Length: 337
Picture 1 (tube, rainbow, N blue to C red):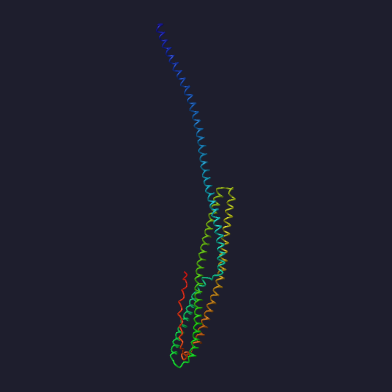
Picture 2: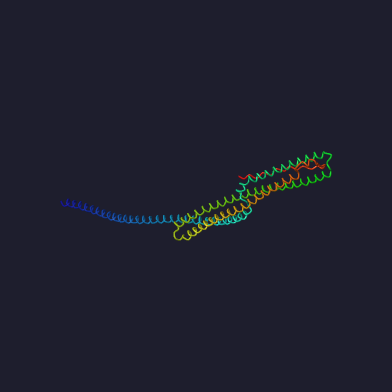
């Protein structure tokens, strides 16, 4: 019985020992679990801290990217502003050149006539020219008739040689005077044609200059619009530190506008002065045409008085008189579109 009790006690002792070992293992595992849970909490806190730091770094990167874009925009605006300043300088030089050209054109316009008014009186001038040509042809026909009468009179034997010689000398003298008058008329016609061509060329040049001035005014207007847009962009993006640049651009725009108005006033003055000079030149040309008509009438009357009647046919002459040369047809005036 004692041995059985001892065996049962030994079994109980072994069970108790196994239970103690199990409790020790459980206690050790519980300690490890607490350490792991603490470690997990620490890692979770560290992860949250790293997440906050990552958000801060990303926000800083976005801020740096935005600042970088602003710096790029600022550099582009600064380059554009520099380019506009250079263009403004070039435009100022072009405006000065245009003003000097306007002054030169105003000086040259004093020597020119109004092309439109001359174009209106072109028909009158051509009619006068045709009348002069018809008068010259009539004079040539009269001279030819006189030559025929002179030849028929030379065949008659009863003519006094002295009288015939005097008549021949008078005829030669009159013929020379007629040739001089004809040459003078042709020179005047050629001069009028040259003046007409010069006026046409001057009118074309003036129209070209006016077109260039209009293009420059349009360019100045476009430049003014771009300057205003640039001023608005700079005022919106740069803030108070760009107010001086905006004021400078606005002042530049005002200067360009003032130059544009000055050019318009100079163009109006130029056109007004050009019209006055043209009117005076037109009156001078009309007086020249009237003088030519009067000279032509006087010449025709003198020719009729010198060679009129049938007395010359009864006189005749043994001296042969050369007929007048046919005048060369005057050059046609340049056609102006």
